[in-house]
Length: 133
Image (cartoon, rainbow, N blue to C red; front, side, top):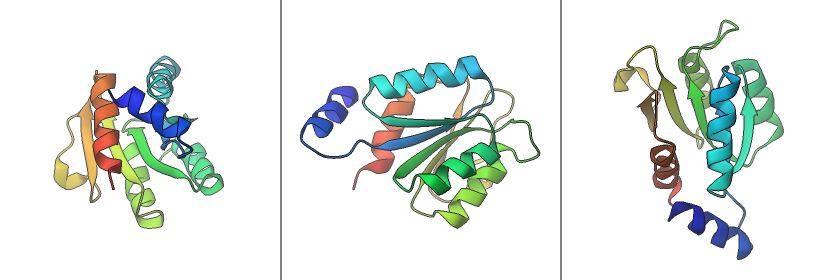
């Protein structure tokens, strides 16, 4: 089970996988943050692209960004994903939207798309798959 694997890794002295969740809707953000924390991930959260960039600058341990496409502030999740890919190439990216389907060709290299409503267990599995060394 992914949660137990994450918790076992933490107990054995390995750092937890750090994930940045970028979602402007507070209820949705809180829900996925709690699911990821319960699975053993270290989670950072932002409500827009500007906050996300600030968090990424301050936390070099972040390995995965999970971002919504539609956000206020002029920079949507696709532009954020492209910016993160350019500036922090090792970060794995999962893009989500409940309003539109995103063509894989529109995503940065090594990014995935998940339609809302998404299954939190599918998000957890995807993060695990993307971060396997």
